[in-house]
Image 1 (cartoon, helix red, strand yellow):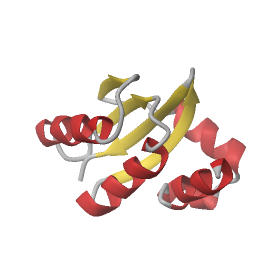
Image 2 (spheres, rainbow, N blue to C red):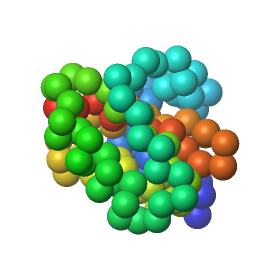
Image 3 (cartoon, helix red, strand yellow):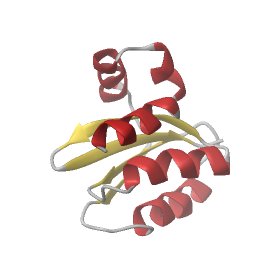
Length: 105
């Protein structure tokens, strides 16, 4: 199941489609971001709702870093980006969760 979720997240990642997994993780880990949300401990749909609300206040092209421990976020965040038109830049392991990078459209 985890491999399937990782595949879905990578498929939606844009840049990561052209990289192997280690290169994708290095790319996302080295990127700068403009704002950050710590949604650790929050369950679906709260991490995505917080990201949506913050992205509405950000300028186009700005990057949001979302940290979430909810296992569903692996699917929810890339799906939200695809539906809302934001660019999902990728995800990296962050402690007991994941850190997601989203570029506002």
